[in-house]
Amino acid sequence: MLDPVAGRPELLETLRTHLEQAQDRRATARLLTLHPNTVDNRLARISALTGLDLSTPRGAALALAALLLRDAGDEDRSCEAGPVPRMSRVRDC
View 1 (cartoon, rainbow, N blue to C red):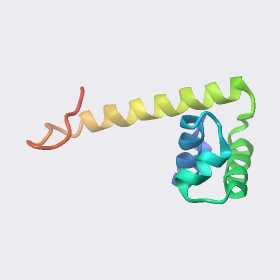
View 2 (tube, one colour):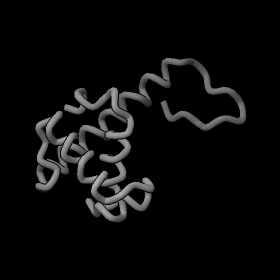
View 3 (cartoon, one colour):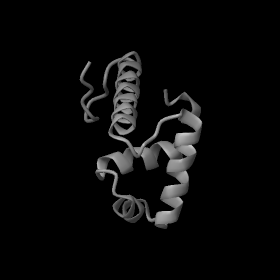
View 4 (tube, rainbow, N blue to C red):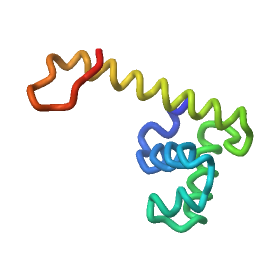
């Protein structure tokens, strides 16, 4: 679902922050040190690329689920990397 924006880390970061901030564009802009219009433009680009309408509860829920699944997949790949070195972050595999 988020494959169209996978190569655009700034879009993924904007989406994640926007959802974490309860879809508050000004809070998102403040945290990312962006102008609110830039946040709006990025969200519009995400919607255009993914087909998700982030202004609806369903679209926001699908985006959040897709981010969580993406994160879970990243954790699974990190578990395949081998043992966790001492004094590093604990990996829950």
